[in-house]
Length: 212
Image (tube, rainbow, N blue to C red; front, top):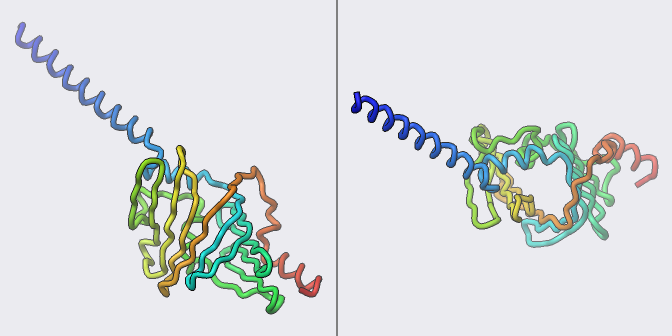
């Protein structure tokens, strides 16, 4: 009988140790702000963003401006003078308004651009298969995402830093091998951004009306 009691106590002790280990492992995982789980949560909950940006193009040239993002699916790049180009991503399209060109924008389907991955309503870095590379250090992480079903369309490299993850830079690598990097500065998270700022049709009508 005493042996049976000792065996029972031993089994209970082992079960408790296993439970404690699993609980601790889960706590450590959640405590790591740069785990893929937490980065997924950060991106999914990133509903709106406004920042100054510096863009480095494939040829080494630089430009700057203001970026607005309203997820899912919408972005706006307002370039500073003398460029004054405007890029709007909305309703599945990417439109480029060139002040030196036609009033009608050059329009492309956004599904062919890897930046569309960043604009999805839900971003699952753990189970989706979109992460092709992931490196992290103290208060910093870099990951590369691409469409696992269409990897030839290019990728987006995301740089996060800070005590809690904050998107600081993204680099778009297109299917032709060229890359464009966007560094964010003075980032804000507005509660609301007017939807009209992302309307390609309204911007087109506005330019036609003003004769731009």
